Image (cartoon, rainbow, N blue to C red; front, side, top):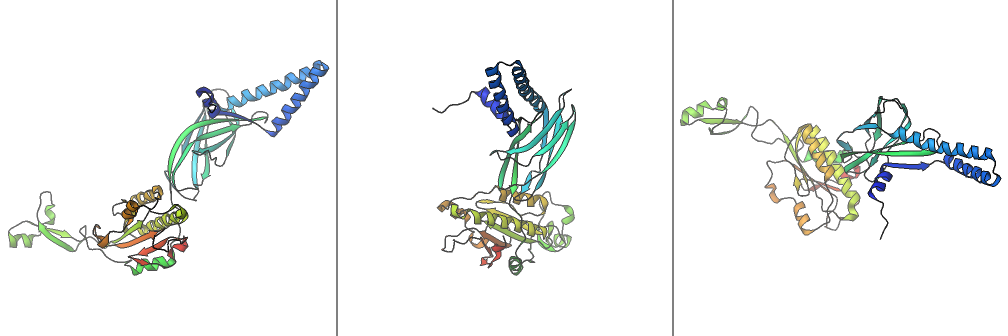
Length: 373
């Protein structure tokens, strides 16, 4: 059976660790040589020198431990990040010790897979004092990103050992796909597919959309009095919403493992389309596999769609998953007309070996549109 550390020892080694530096290794070798010389010669001077060197090692460990104790840490990172885009993380540290100063501290973020991010140094932190530190974080993977804590190290006072302490501080962040410029050919395809088309739908506006009978709760200011007088029934005037453009972005998730890179490019392209179309006033619905959002506009809806793309996962092609990815015939379940944009990372029609995703607008392939990603 494999050897397992007791719980107490496991906790100690997880939250505290010590590594010897190159200078410390030389010091230990020299200490060993002095000890051998003292035993062989019996010279009191060698014993005095040996005891001094051993006391330096002991003092080094105690002083480093006190530097790392009683520190309060708080981290602030935006909840929504973008792939390969640096973001500024702010770390607040406070020394809770009443009398002792912490010297030569080096702090770094630790992720769930023990990846260590750029170090931030503090030369001294007086008792009761606090510092605000800022440093860049650059996500390298899309999806959920878990930061497990802060690792603090010090070589104080003599640089013989590197003492490390781990402060648990879990944060789960969402990393969105990378936003890239839209290819000009794809923009032309959007324009040809009805980039400026108007959707006739009920909503706030000035033009007449429909007349219907009054229902409880209707605004009395919407009563159409000429029709009411002619029919002797209260009739409500419904107005037509102002011009609004709609788009449905569909990203199939039934993709084999060999097309993982094209799938990531497809997700990135879909995120870029969401960013571009919402900026130009589109009302967008996003479909990722079997998941779908409602139609919407604005910053809050954009963040919701980007979060959907950030958390979507590739599925192995199966009959059930491929059936969920199919576009409904006749667009019967849509709330209104709109431009249908499909971003495919793979298809089983024989030409699915392409390295780049395919873009179809209203069923028509846009040549070279995905190569901009």
